[in-house]
Image (cartoon, rainbow, N blue to C red; front, side, top):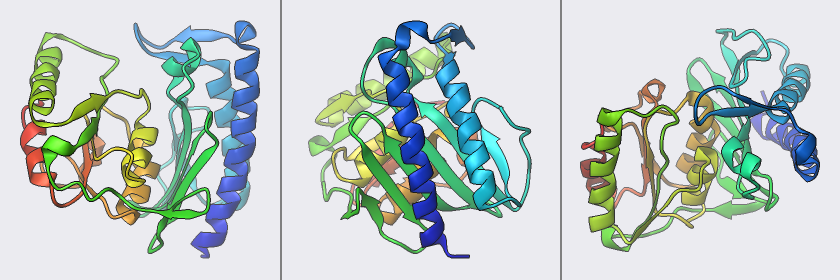
Length: 262
């Protein structure tokens, strides 16, 4: 399998869906919005974008199954799996905040072997494949060389489902990074957070209560840009929805902070 060639096929598909998503935002007053939860929205744009992605990706690799956020196709457990978030940052999209992305990963026997993330508004295409560098719009990207947590710009996010226990632990973790880091950003899209660490704009990203489609593509992009990526226990169990991304120099200080999270 030629992963490089496949990656560029996925990029072209992603670009076309990005154009659709951006065009639909211009006619947003006519878009149907549904609530999945108190703070969790899905629009018809999410659903239609996912359907288009599934159709196109199925032509590239017919033997692959799918894990998708909006469940527009039967979720299948196969050796090859496309992992798709058609619109990461729907809350931003709904409110007209121009930070939202498309995230597509290909997994083989549990290993992520290809990742593509398009940050739609800025037309920034991040991508990588197994044993390759990480790229943004054709240029190789690298993580930052930040060697002190006190100099680190940190990204994080918050879960849609909240309760007193979660909020307390999130607050304790935030206090640690506010006290020990330079500053914190909350962009509202995990896929973009991962890519911003990969290209050195952010130095650290951590978050809990995620789904695999939020982070799958960003994991390989960040790792191939030189990042340390783990769960909160210095392991690789991303199914629990916890992730830490930084460089190897400051990772211990970062892991100390996320240890406060449940």
